[in-house]
Picture 1 (cartoon, rainbow, N blue to C red):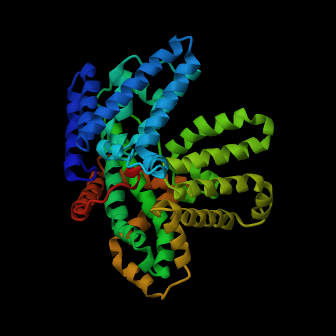
Picture 2: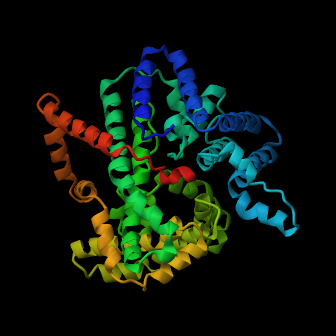
Picture 3: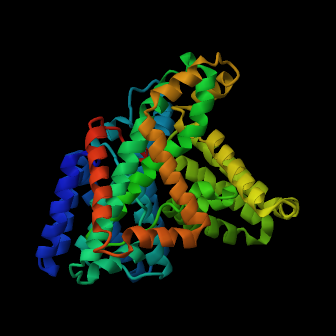
Length: 477
């Protein structure tokens, strides 16, 4: 079921109002049923697999604190989680080549074609995080299986997160959610603008990005320069669009999901960027990898943090896919963050001499340039494609630049400029942004016509531009 389809939107809205008509004791069953139907619409084997996966982690969670073999059970649970992820996601990269060395026709990766492990990285991290929390005593094991199952398969977040924490998500299921008109309206508004980000902005860029990477040998260098600096915006509006849809619909059901973005391209350095970009993933790796590794090797002093950053971002890159390009992506992020850590005093001394405006914006521009260059590895199908991309940057005729500028609809430039200006105002001029909010949305009765004009316009744009379906970028991870 395509999330950006009119069918999904209408069914979700109807399901929200049915949810509040049900008694509290039936609501979790209802959400589990909806989530199962959603997953089954992609693949029935995937549904069976996720239920089995949930059962295994559920019973490990119950057994770990009650057993005298707590450490052994915990390690077994982690191994099972990592093994299934490795087999279903990385077999073509790491397992199949081993069999091929011995001239075997066995292809373990064929299993992933049967199950189609959509969302596997997200629910695996959730499962691992839960077991760590239980083992460390940070939370008690969940005794209600339906609650735990919903934590794993809740349909708004299933495809691409946010990556929920069990001690954040599960307690919310135990409260009786009363119908709150403002909460439902806020949730639907967030989802609406998430649809807008995806359909009106990201989808307009997708054909250019995808076709260029699919035909790198025939693409002009001037086009690649343009794409390099546009592709972070494509990634941001595509992924934050999905996140807004997930957070919005979940909020309408009375469930708050973790935030995933906080105006990342207004960050003044790479370290801050990764605190504001894909936040649920960054925080997961920070808490469960970086802190654990740096603590274990604390006797190394500051070099423990250096090592922990490389370990964290190497795994961060591997999370995104099986390929050397993703490992390089993680590696260069680690290089940048360690560089910023060890040169902080020198950089602060240099930047302190600059006027505040120039200091802020030079940091933002340099960070954006770094992010743009490094994410050639993200969008490239493989490492060799990334090398081809960089080698083609010096080979251009100049004609392609004009063609892409003409090929992208004018509406795209209007929409993206509007969103970026709003984000700058919200980030740099918070008081001004609050005044704008109050002026547009403060008086409910007075500004009703204005608000519904905006909503109607957004819906009309979605209806006109929504005919061509483009997969969410992060659905593949």
